[in-house]
Image (cartoon, rainbow, N blue to C red):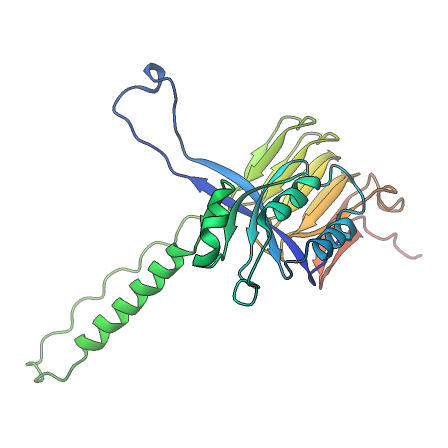
Length: 287
């Protein structure tokens, strides 16, 4: 199990890239831009000391050289930005690169940090969207307060007929994959569960914002609750994974999956801050 929060924490997050609409047909253009979801690691810093971060990463990965496999990373400095006068961004980017994490953006940076961040070609995630949302809520609250100013009581009018209750929103269906997931492939179920009915091979990676269900032998890497849902689980009929994760808490199996649970129905869930693996095979009835 890998869970380290004193200096460095990792989570999975998703980014949607905007779509560019053009009047010409895509086939007539040299480039086509569409919406695409990219899974990125959030590297949440609780220290700017490269030595401490290096030690935390070494402990987290257990010395596994391909633990992250060139994932994109968003450096989150929100927890330390207000009390840290200087961050060596080049050293930080190079350190993440050492562990095969490719930094693409910085979240929570102060205005004083912006120039140095941009100089390295990193994007700035300044939380402007959240600020705008808060402003909209404040404006709506103010408008509501004005609307309740004292006014003369109007003459009684008949009560209107109640409008029919809106139909409940349709649930998001699970993503179903019926073909084998080969080495080097990545499957991501955004905003839903992932159901796979074929084998997941070594070197493959399956990710879901919800739970993962595999009704065939499962090897490779499985990451459930990628958007932070700690109640997500991983279910399998024959488990032999290289790595599992629930809501950003990782566990690797360098010495092999537990023998008493390998290649049999089992579930993986998060209990507190640790990964728990339990059998789904009913216990034999006592005579």
